[in-house]
Image 1 (cartoon, one colour):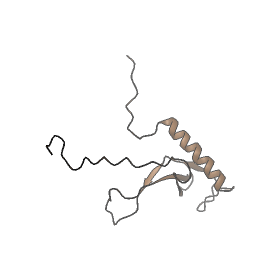
Image 2: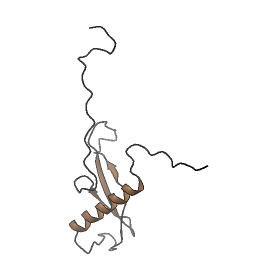
Image 3: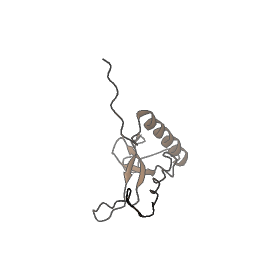
Length: 115
């Protein structure tokens, strides 16, 4: 019996997409960050591009639904863990995602109700 791969969560990138994102990040970073790319903390030149992360503005610890969300590319020093964050959308690593369309207004009438 062959095992099928586990189901993918909607919107979760597969390994090929993660590799493509990392390559786009590397291309953008090397074109915008001149050599040598030296860590300001430890002096290392050993960096890793990690999986994309989401950041939200701090609102006193409260989670605000519908507020801004920034998708970032973390670039971490492999010696001391100092991390730089680059915006994934403005750098072209991730295509800008449009918000879902608003549901059409049916004039306020409930489905199945008489007008």
